Image (cartoon, rainbow, N blue to C red; front, top):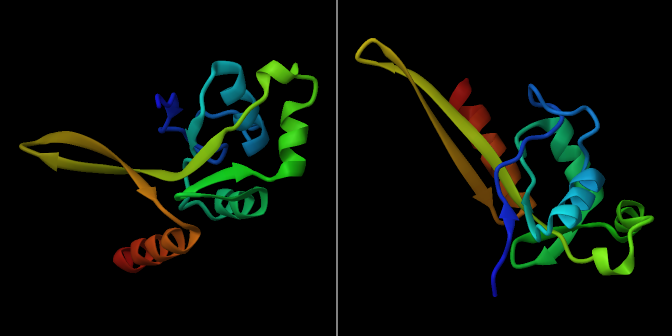
Amino acid sequence: MPVIADLHIHSRFSRATSRELSFVALHRAALDKGIGLVGTGDITHPGWLAELEEQLEEAGDGLFRLKPELTRDAEQGLPASCTGEVRFVLQVEISNIYKLDGRVRKNHNLVFLPSLDAVHRFRERLAGEMT
């Protein structure tokens, strides 16, 4: 079964992103574009993670979905043929910037995690590495 996905996004807490970005907006935009799987982006940001925990619920197999009351808000005014399932996968981009041979190098890695427990452990591990 083919899946159309957007796995590299950022939250409104990132630079150069819309202040209107929300999980409701992401759900609706995914439906508009025919996307069935969306990365959550920025799971290490405490504000975004709090919203994620408040607005999403587990959908099984390490995926999440918008809570029903928020799904209704996101799909308000859409024809029934334009509504559907949108799943979210817990995701963050880690940017590694370093110098090699006198030049700045940048390496961006996408990290996907299977559960909120894994997210919390990941955040603790990152915090421990920075101290």
